[in-house]
Length: 380
Image (cartoon, rainbow, N blue to C red; front, side, top):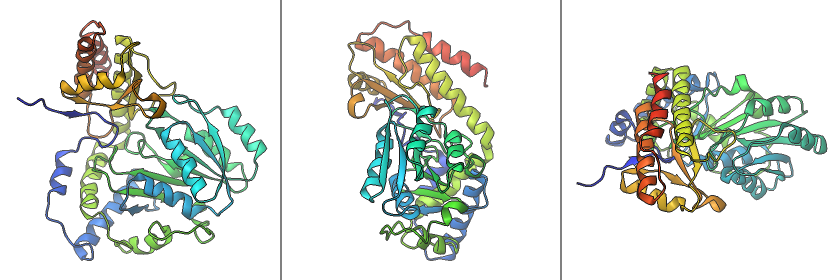
């Protein structure tokens, strides 16, 4: 019998049955009352997710589309921005900002580490004209969490600075309430903890950021926030929307809100802790010094190629992600965001133990599983 594949990659992630059912329905036309009704329901649920009265805008794009929109709609050419560049997606903020002619202060950080507060203050002292700080809340490439609360406080002390946050792998994992934190622009994507296929991105912005919309002189067409706001307030979109993804988002948001955001955050915390502690118990070294609850990265044992290990793990039915750029072949990443529960974690740790044994790294079978079970028992 063919081995059952279990998806543990940090996007796309597994889909709940309710979402699969919604995606499998016959498509409807978007210029109809039926679509408008569903679209307005989604807007209201997104407001509850973010604990705000300001509805975000949605684009038919990957999360990178909303990242681009964040740059082109809320800045002017020549604005100076500070980029927290601590991974593949920090590099994306840098590259987007440079593409649209912003002056970039590139705070490059070793992958697996987070920023230093004193260094942030030094940079602000050197460049007091910074108009924005761009950061990942959860840097997926390094499975690292960055403290956005502190950066929000820094922004508030500057004359005209906004905090722009990539929450693509933190929204739906943590309680991310932008108004309480002090985030000005927040983006996310459908294929992570929102438990959908790729193709839908979401951008929320504060009153402070809204003041910049009319002032931006950077060219934009499809990713015009102003154009979308006018349409989406009426339950429509400026261009053809990702119809079935929006209908499916209605279902996934039901699941998230029914679980309750504090409970959702607690579930992800336990899954992450169980994964990290189990891997350490086996004898593996974690990648991040500031680990996120969305995914866990770990180094392969000395002398073992991480990608070869992943191939063995896949033969056992577990698909995990590898490393990017200079970490390729050195690390593997296990996702635990969205449609996962604690028993999924016990299962994947068992798979890791089997795969390590088969590839030639001696482990005490069951040791990591036992550690994961001990942590899970505190939760269930």
